[in-house]
Length: 104
Image (tube, rainbow, N blue to C red):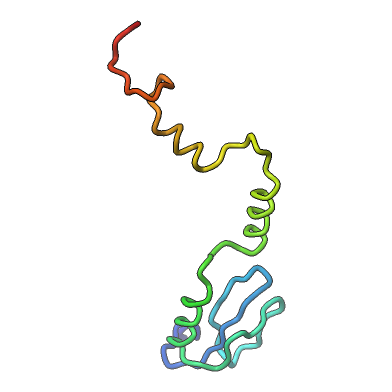
């Protein structure tokens, strides 16, 4: 028996859950609890194309919200991505000038 999700000639829906995750779903299979149809009865390719166009951020909605909340509420003294980038550019001894290996 072949997997109905792989049927290139099948007719599918695109489903979405509360976390914003998408999937293709064969039309003859009952939609599971927690999922809803957002694109109805189309070819497998059309459904995959729909997902590619609309599901551009793979993070679950709860993670997106948590990260946004953190950024809004993070203390001012917390390191930012720019701070981390600047630190990487410094030499191992902490100065901005590259170390020549000499002992002072």
